[in-house]
Every structure is written in C-alpha cells, then in structure tokens.
Image (tube, rainbow, N blue to C red; front, side, top):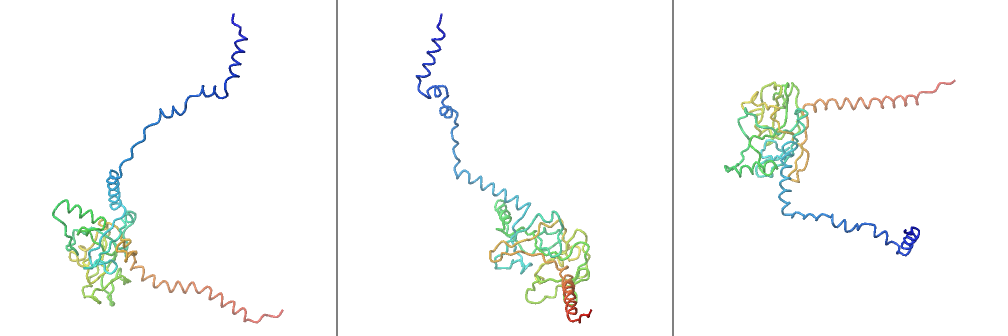
Length: 304
C-alpha cells in the first residue's frame, strides 16, 4: 500500500523548496514566441514614382467632374463684355469661375452675367479659336479650355441678361436708355467703346417669349447680341436651356481678382425712388417725438 500521507508531504516539500516564480513561468506560454510566430511580414511601401501617375489621374478625373457639374473656369476672348470682363486684343483675357449649380434650382434673372451655348439662330461669333485638325491636339486644346488655359469653343458665349420671358424690351428712350416694360434701365456697367454710342443701339419693342432671355454685352458699341444675331427679335433670343452657368468671380489675372456682380438694372430704378421715401419715413418718427418733447418743455405748467 502506498503511504498517501507521505506522498502528500513530499509534494508540499517540493513546492516549498522551489524558487519563487518557477511554477508560474513554467506554466505560462511564451507570449513573445507566440507573437513572433503569428506576426505578418510588413508590406512594402509603393514607390513615389509609381503613385504619382495614380494621383495625377485621380486629380484629373475629380477636376473634370467638378468642372462638368459644379463650376468651371472660362477664358474670355471677346471684347463684348468690356470693361466688366477683359477680353480685349493684346491684353491678358480674364479667367472667370462659372457657377454651374445655381440654375439647377432657379432661372437666370436680369443683371446676371451668364455663359451659354450659342443658339442655332445666331449667325455670327465674336471670336475664332485656332483648333488643330489633329484629333489628339484638338482634344488637348478642348481639355485645356476646361481649365481656362485655352480659348473656349466658339459656341460658348458670355453676355448679360437684360430681360426674361414675358417682358417687353426696346431701345431707346429720349436719353438713349434701354427700356423694359416701358421703364428705363439703370446700367452703370455699360461701356461705350470710343466714348459715345455709335448709333446702332435702337431696336423695336419685342416681347421676350417664355423660356427665353434677351442678352446684351456691356460693351454696347462692340457686341453682337440679341439686338443683331439672326436679324434680332425672335432669332436673338437665348433659350434658358442653353445657359451653362453664372459668372461669379474673376480668378485670373491676380490684379483683377474680384466678383463679377449681378446688378439688376430693372429694380435699381425703382429702388432709387423708394430710398428717399423710406429714409423720410424712418426720420419722421424721431422728428415728431423730439418736437413733442420741445413743446412740452416750453409750454408753461398749469398752477394747481
């Protein structure tokens, strides 16, 4: 028979004689060895020169998407919008940022400077682009025009909206001003190349059809617009569907960084008449109050 008590005593003595920590270290697995055995080899980083073409490709795709659906830079090669937008011969043509989102939610309004596709009824362009006959070079030129690095397509035109569908436009009143619905316009942006009107401003009253725009250049002496394109009248109207976007900001050259503006020539005249009345109405209250206070002070008090 085995002496159970003695065996148990031997086990206790073995535990007491063992060095502290030996039992723990013997029973625990080697964590470092386990980590080393399961560690994955580090991935080799891609070379910068291999990533560069990918980055350039992604940047081009994003830029094209932005220019197609959000905003686009246009080069102004025509003198018709002088001096709001520079496009004169021998000078550095303005690059303008055109908002392509705004007219998804609203229609162009009088005073807006818009870029649009030339209607089929328009018979004359204001500038000519030197497009190569080589398909590849021509594609590069078209791509450059999207970034404002080359002249746009001849079918891309920029003008200012003067009247919209349902309004009657004509020129001129006794002072030579354009009129809409019988009221003269206030147009501080108009530039007369040569100093005075050249005599080609007059046109008969015309009712702009719904869904159409009557557009004119700020350089009234040198602009082929709704007054003359296709013989004028209905042929000069620009369909709203042809509008690409609204010119917002001049981005180049740096010396001309500024907003394009959308001064409404129709409301400005009415506002000019309303402002003096509004100011007078606002001043009336404190004047009456002050007058009453002065009279109350000067009036002799009644004796009780």
